[in-house]
Image (cartoon, rainbow, N blue to C red):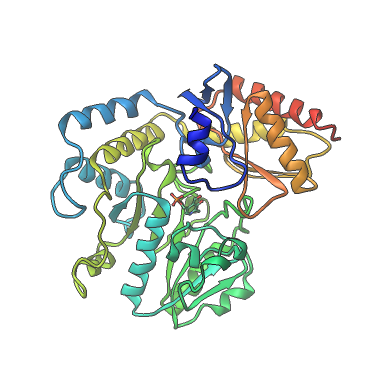
Length: 396
Ligand SMILES: Cc1ncc(COP(=O)(O)O)c(C=O)c1O
């Protein structure tokens, strides 16, 4: 079998039409295929490589940790320096009530842990989430995701889950003393970059506090600088009770976390003991990578340049066929008149050597989430190619 046959037959597929780019290597803003063709990676592997591919400091941290030890024990038993350093650094960058980290392997796992923690803290079962939200693909996260077409085949899912409309203050009245938690993306990602009104998250926070429900911010996609601050909730002057993160956390390595107060987290140690466990969560190599990633993001002015770069993208992506650009920092949705148009443009972009991608719940837009350290020259060149790709489709 050739490599494409193996890919299609020996690897489980997730869709009938995968992109099938055969990867040779990746570096900074670029991915190279087996033929040597270079592609601008303007989606960062879906909001993962916020510091570009194979950042040398991450590589160095990974190598140094591999030379000492890899997996030694399931999470939570041994004292491992890479976990300690990362937890200390991460909590130093967060509000004082988010002072305790539970490390996991992915975004969906972070949300699973957060939902369990909210039930344990409140003794309640009702979970409220938002329509069109995406929180992951495992049973719990899928249950609180708002896209029915992805859910119907897997019912029954978690009971006692209600949905409210994102950014609708009226709907906040549904949050009651029965509610264990509200889980929300502060800026909805896979709904097509939906940005809340400035007062919405404050009103949500107030309602949760009033009825004793925990507020979970899912920053799996928005975290680690994507919107121009380390976490997007910083734009809104609101602090959640639980924060979930993953994706860009490890600088290209798989790691996630749910973060809350020490008081809340201590409840997972009893009633029952081992209330949440994972073998690989907090893998030392991935923690070392995440620590390097955090240092890169916070120590060289990278974040303060994000908004300026986002504005440049917006300025350069002018075309009569673009209906709207929704953007916070370098998290962008480019909207057209139909899903078919988006399909054509994504394909034409790939031809031109630019990787863009769809959203799960917003077919008339494509996403851009480039590395935060993309250069001005790279932005100008890649936007030129996107405009050429749009023109190729005969629009406008
Ligand atoms: C907001 C949000 N939460 C959770 C997830 C799930 O993360 P993972 O794919 O790492 O399980 C995603 C993935 O796209 C996401 O965007």
